[in-house]
Image (cartoon, rainbow, N blue to C red; front, top):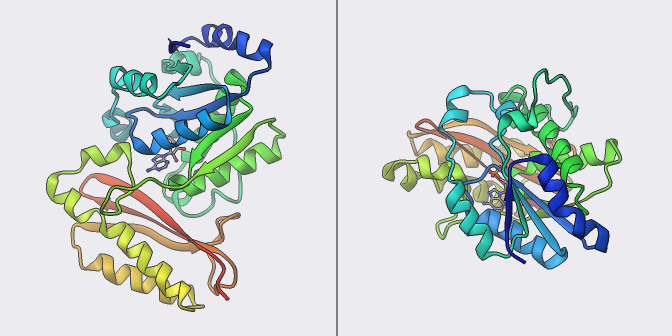
Length: 285
Ligand code: AMP
């Protein structure tokens, strides 16, 4: 089956009609493009578990809290097409903003609770934009399964909650974070780092691992684990911490005393680039 590329919702639906008629399983991998091995892992999983894989490429304007970030976000459609072709993707959906948000556009999805802390606190409107576009993609593609990375753990929690609350008939699959050899989580934004910034960027994951180690060795106090991680980051003056928090993995609420599994999540700025990462610390004892 050769790759079909479209930016039109009606055309996408026609492209998927044979799959639906034959009862084939449809997998959706929503992305913002500039595809890398992290996206590749989601595509691979979708290929294993479904018959038709749809990759959407859409730099969603309503999830950006800063205009310059939206404008500077990498766009590499020709390369992304090659990337998807080589990985057996059936359909690519790459709409323009006006196809997704025809004027006047009035409806948004607000997921409360899980969006209160971490990125939700520092990026006003971000998760409303994410939930809205993902629900739209679910209605457009009507996938059986949809694939998301744990790198964006709060996003995954938001989507799981939205699907549960709004009874969306789709199975959400989370995939582990793919990293560079030095631990830096792959991200389309990494290409914006200068050579010097790239050199210090792995400190983010090192700090999270240090917190994880403290928790694994019995630190019951979240502050203690956070302090260790922050001390490591303080050694790098180029790194500015936006947040570093220990949260419970489902509700994404800060935890003071660690009793069950927790996620340590952080966002840092290195120069003008914002990076996020997190680690899951299983329940100890
Ligand atoms: P993005 O294009 O950055 O919006 O990401 C699209 C999807 O790929 C999201 O579900 C991300 O969580 C996932 N993703 C991004 N980077 C990684 C990574 N390094 N490892 C695993 N999944 C990732």
